[in-house]
Image (tube, rainbow, N blue to C red; front, side):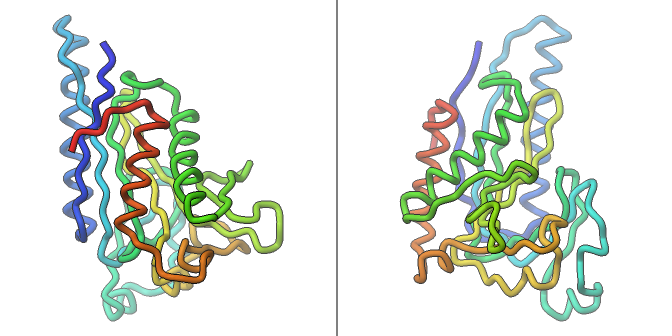
Length: 233
């Protein structure tokens, strides 16, 4: 039986390490239930979770990422107060920090649709619908994941990065939407390993600071609609 209830939690400002561990604990607990159901013939419903946070400044490098895409030495990172983690998601290097909403859906896709391409498409759709409320036209790029502005032009720029991991159709990691992000941090990396394309934020696109709490509410609403989920707060 599909369980489309999703437990929601806004974690506020967090260190990356603690939130990553929280994700792993939830992820493992869901897989444990699935394995128990499979091996013992039980039918315990699996849980789904959605975590939102604004991380303290951190660069994360995905499984296939290249360390040379980080343009600062470790001592320089320390001087700037920025953490660095090699992690187990797809994708290359990205930045998380204040003014950016990082969303971690930890879902059993057997409760929705066990299709990773559709899942990523849904994450992109949530962001596209959300930023449209602020008059920003986001689109997909054929060759890259995430949400982009002015795809196919010399000024193509990414507003939302996506990197996920799945095991037994359970997801972790997710997406990062630049709202009022300090974009100078992106000058110290080759974002997502993609050369020659820029990054942007909702603040830059609209010319004014955005109410980040309002964006969180809209993201949660669109998440519910796109996944057909019941958000439990």
